[in-house]
Amino acid sequence: MLRIAVPNKGSLSGPAAEMLHEAGYQQRRESKELRIVDPENEVEFFYLRPRDIAIYVSSGRLDIGITGRDLLIDSGANSEEILPLGFARSTFRYATKPGTVNGLADLSGKTVATSYEGIVAKHLADQGIDASVVHLDGAVETAIELGVAEVIADVVETGTSLRNAGLEVFGEPIMKSEAVVIRRSGADTEEAAEPKVQQFLRRLQGVLVARTYVMMDYDCRVEQLEKAVALTPGLESPTVSPLHNEGWVAVRAMVPAKEAQRIMDDLYEIGARAILTTAIHACRL
Image (cartoon, rainbow, N blue to C red; front, top):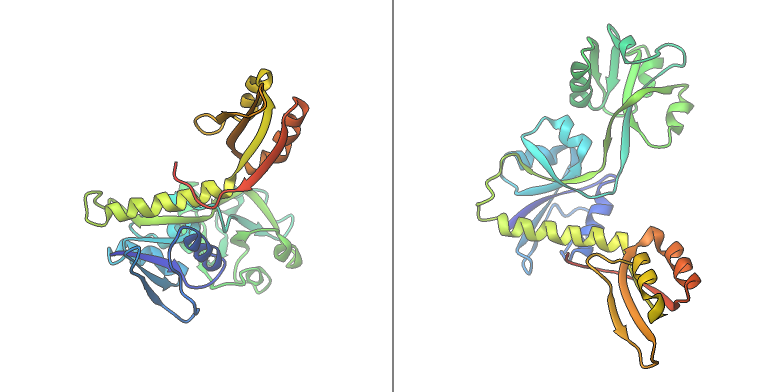
């Protein structure tokens, strides 16, 4: 039975559970549940603190897990990313009071407060900067005001909380994070769980594609077919079927969801009609 670690709370928890549900896996009904078994899919889910998941997976006790890229790197655990999931995106940056630091070189000799000590220490070392790192659990914006540090490093989404604290970001982003599937580094691909791991990854990839594409159907004149196919090439090629009315064909193809409205406009301009889009709930490519 495949053993999978899932975030039990925070910004990763809800979207992870939703994606797993869309992929056909049973999920917990109560937030207090720490473990459930999905016998139909031969999977056992363990609901753990997102920050601990990489450590559990690296121990080999669990086969794979879902956590944040930032938490994976910060843990220093012997685990690796195998599939990005596209949600819980964030950017990790340095910030301080305006006018006090112009760039990373100015961090030498200063103290940086952060909840992600592993990420910051590695970044500073990679940049050849000799600075001290102080670990704080949350609310690092107050560290400068209280004199604990001259600089902070934290997740930045809109930047509102930083501005409210009188701080501004500087330099290039330390890293960009999102939810990822992880497994123990160097895991043996011949181990017994590997077929189930690959099936799990295919299901999640199917959800990602289904969220990114829509199915588009339309009718067009035969003489306009080449132009229409150029607009909707599909993944391999579109499906084309003759209609009862001579000279007309029906076309079906997957198109990127974010481009669907523009493509519909372009198809209409070349004479296509009955243009429809439908959501894709699952797929295998």
